[in-house]
Image 1 (cartoon, rainbow, N blue to C red):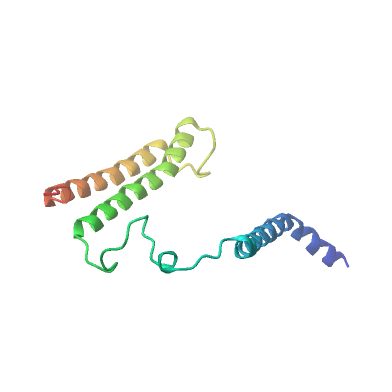
Image 2: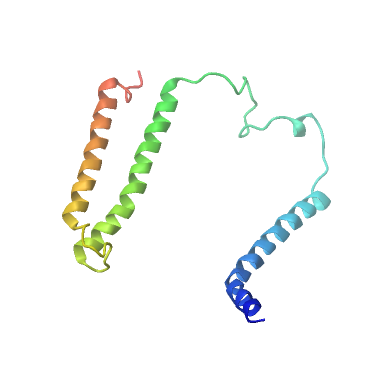
Length: 141
């Protein structure tokens, strides 16, 4: 009996998650059903046609694109990931520099260590940026 009470008490924090999940599923089902019952029932060639941001499709969607578009996308991801990696580093560096919260109980991660690691990271990114620049990735002619 005591084990069952302990299990029930352990599950209490998850009850709110279950309620939110049930409400989300119920709302999704209600929206789908109401849209089907109340929504307009028009059919035709225009309604059944492909919609591409208001423009009629003029070519096959599987055509080849210039590699520059993919390179720009990869560069965007590279520098986006850089910011994502630097954000927790900045927090850790701030905490190490001010001593507000101990990050490392052993004291191995000092502000000099963190600054050096970020410096190496930024130098590697700068080398990659210069390499891409020399290869002509940023030229669109």
